[in-house]
Image 1 (cartoon, rainbow, N blue to C red):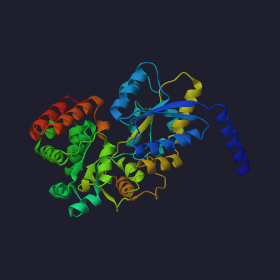
Image 2 (tube, rainbow, N blue to C red):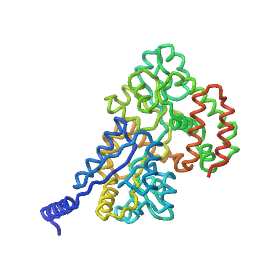
Image 3 (cartoon, helix red, strand yellow):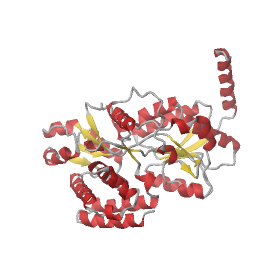
Image 4 (spheres, helix red, strand yellow):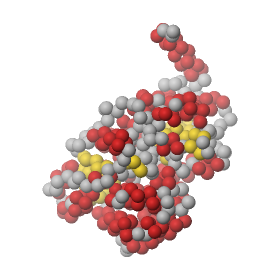
Length: 409
């Protein structure tokens, strides 16, 4: 039997071994907002405690960051690890043999039994082999509402999208921006997809993005979503900020009534000291059809020749899903853990809503799991143009959307 003393000695020996092989590992990601920086710092702190060093290489903006990462990898200058969304973004890199197979780590750490829902690990798996470590569940399906903005407008805080939209005139009359939205295609297409998932039955969303069914994409149900998106365009007409976190700040400071954004917005509210349920409300599924899309972030590890770097990669991969790491990171990030066996009793009101939906199985796959990056980029471009040009009718935008779905793989 191992005594506490012997385990401490073994731990000291292991720590000494780690220190002896301490390695600087460059880690690339796009987490640059206040809340995101606080969350990634938890990963860095845990990794540095192993005796290795997390060399932070943050690049603002997901699309820009992915382009730089792919260029580095295909150009023969790989980093030690990098963040993508789990899903189809890394398919071509895996096919090119540029990413490390971490199946051995996943098996040794028991990820197959721990990751919940299992689709998160499935999204990291190609031909039965695991290529990434999923670290969180991020859902797009949230409407964040400023209590002070609605108080100033003399309107009750809404409980669903219909009530929110009905308050638009009152908010404008009080000098508020009804809907905060950054001027970037991924934010605008994200809001549209939230509407599709929240205002219609889930079968419509899955028919469009899963089955690539153009009859559904061009049908009357989806037409109502494009009309809702046109109304959202009007509500967001005076929202001129670019970045998502700047739009979130409009809600935090009471300058805007609300924002459709993923649960990563919680990190910004936390940094600002705002209290869920008191200063702001969070409405999953826009308060209409509460559910979560099981998107999120994962870390991939390039194939490296250096054995010390490879060892550091393995140490980081295993560490990312450890219980303590999952708790500290996700509490800061506002996301849900990928492990189903950890205690998040310290989570705020909004995270508790997300956990309840997760437990109830009220889930949808994320668009990034169902569509290729090329398709996603085309949809982003469509909505960049749609939100920038009010002369584009909902019907015209839907026709372009159908063409994109028809060509989707």
